[in-house]
Picture (tube, rainbow, N blue to C red):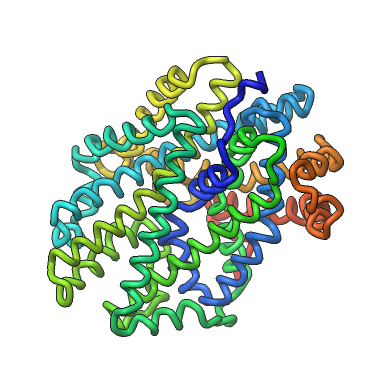
Length: 474
């Protein structure tokens, strides 16, 4: 079975695919604005430290488990634990979580694709209208765009690991980087852009408190696709000669670099077209920024570039975000697909068909949660607020379970799989890792303070989301 398992064709292919899963909407929009609102350079520094000191060891834990077992998350937990039921539950969580995250991520990707189409058709003035987004997400066109996005995702995943995921990553990720750099270069030439750069990069340590630190750590954890089973699944596609620690470092570095450079696009753009803006008033919601705020900024470009030029810039931006969303959703959805193939022995085509059907059903329920059907719009309530079906999926599976899954993988590799097996797997293909300071740091951190930090994040998320109480309230 393991001999016939699909593998990435090259180290570069794996790094680009893993980076594609990590680089998403939050990196391109949410992170830069979050940094601007929470201390600028100080937030950036904390984020970078958390990525390499906390998130990187967790990534190594996931990748090592996946490669050693040669299976999906459920199969990996089951195999390495000897079939212990407690760890089977952890495996199931690592399968269900990415599937449900794919559900809401599909809906957001559909919106992005719709805005990409509309901006390309020259409807930028309509997109800049504050009422357009609300009308758009309640219209039937959402479902037509959903068909198109599903077709793209299916075409990539049906090609398998080497001919589908890897080939798409080799095309989409370099294209994403080039478009990002082009937009950054353009934005930095605009009037007052350097004011945005200064606000973004100059540290303001007075804004740093416990909640901001928690936010920076959560952002770092989420942006690297940890707790979704992706790195376990992708790890199972890596051959034994590959350098896991070296590759993981490059994935983390790429993800951080993209988030940082995105800030050089978003903040200077905001300051350039609205010099008097107070960044503290910006919404931290990526959705609000992408669909409500940024179209108005792009439309303002018509004063210097003309309407066609402004529409072209908007189209490149939405294409950039669409590529980031597609690479993420492909990685996320590959986890349950791989699990169904491994655990039930079905073909990739059959797994995609069955899970694709379930994905459509849940995604349609989410799409109906924005006023089209009251049952889904007012699905339940907690913490004193009414929650839609979409809200439930996001709050439970993205905000809450991800840090729990990260906690479980740390406990598993150190206390169930054991430290010596963990190290032995990472040593394969990485002779410089064995006996290094980095190895010793990973040993200590994964077995001690990282699980404590993730447990605190999990408990605080539950308290805030469902009871309206924060552990970090001042």
